[in-house]
Length: 116
Image 1 (cartoon, helix red, strand yellow):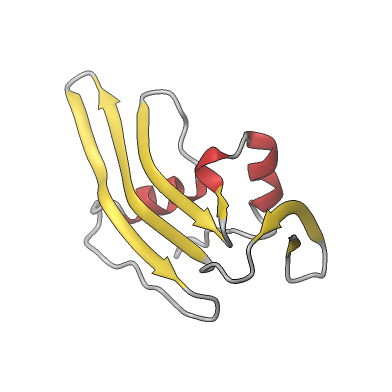
Image 2: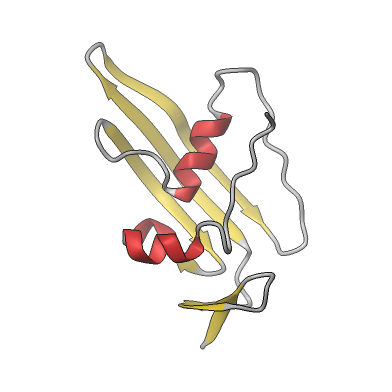
């Protein structure tokens, strides 16, 4: 068992698989439940990102890029939002983590940088 290490040499207690891809997203779906019905913002997105690689997410304004990133990081409020699929970070299934373990990853291991 290894530990997830951040760029500052600190480690978290979450076990990571060094042979796993850095980030693996499988059939991710995010739906907003509104008074007018369901809005499918992310619909079946899958990708694998290996350590040292770069992935660009591009699309028109309103196409779901930010919702995708927030879904990957589990930053969307649970109320009126339905999420499905699997997100693994270094072999850790973060879709199964509780808030405490997610907070260990946010900012140290996983961060979202906005263009503004």
